[in-house]
Image (tube, rainbow, N blue to C red; front, side, top):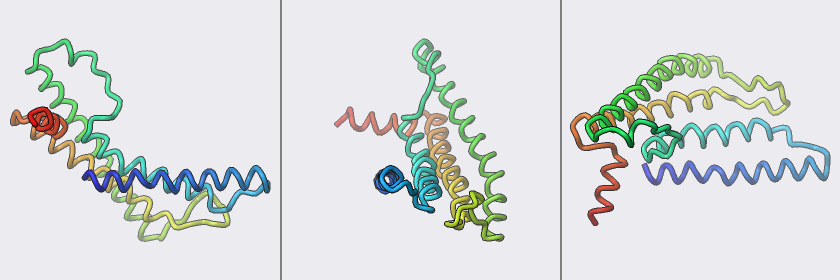
Length: 165
C-alpha cells in the first residue's frame, strides 16, 4: 500500500507541469491547449480518489474529535467502531451506485461532455469511484475488524510497533 500511495502521489508532478504549461501559454500566447481542462480533471481526480484509501489508513483525514479525548478507552474504541462502520456503509452505498454508472459509461464508450475539441473518452475515469470505494471499504473493514477484536486500527498497530522498536 505504501508504494501504491507514493506512486499515486507522484501524479501531482504532471499535474503541476500541466497547469504551469497551460498558464504560461495562456499568459504569453493568449492560448490554452484544448486538452488542458480535461487532463487537469483526470490527474487531480486520480490523485484525490486513489489517495483517499491511503489517507483513511493513515488517519490523516479531517476528523472532529470532540468526544474522544474525554471518554474512557472502552468508549473510545466504541466510537471508533461506529465511525468505521459509518465509513464502510457510505463507501458501500457509493459502490452500489457507482458500479452501474461506470458499467453504463463503459458500454457506451462515453466521452467528455465539456464539448471541447479534445473530447477524450471518460468511461475509464468513471471506474475511479468504484475502485477507490473498494480500497476505502477494504481499509475500513480491516480497521473495523481490528477494533472489534481489540487489536486496533492499522495505524495504531503500526505506531505500537514503531514505539516498541
